[in-house]
Image 1 (cartoon, rainbow, N blue to C red):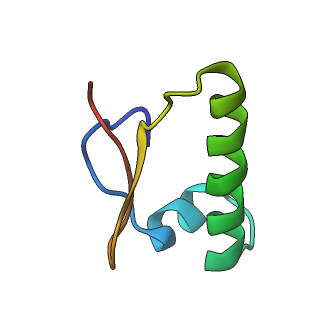
Image 2 (cartoon, helix red, strand yellow; image 1 turned 120 degrees about the vertical axis):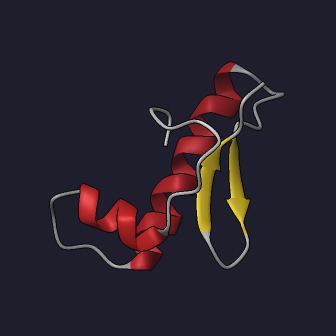
Length: 61
């Protein structure tokens, strides 16, 4: 999602790009963990946006 800032990636697209068998709950868990790791470094981190019914995107600032 960082390579295509501003563009929404669906869970299915992220699963396909992972090159391993995962389900959508795995994607959700990983996004949650990634957010937590960034927040440790920057408490104002909000670059990963959940787009309801569509997926995730990296917000451009």
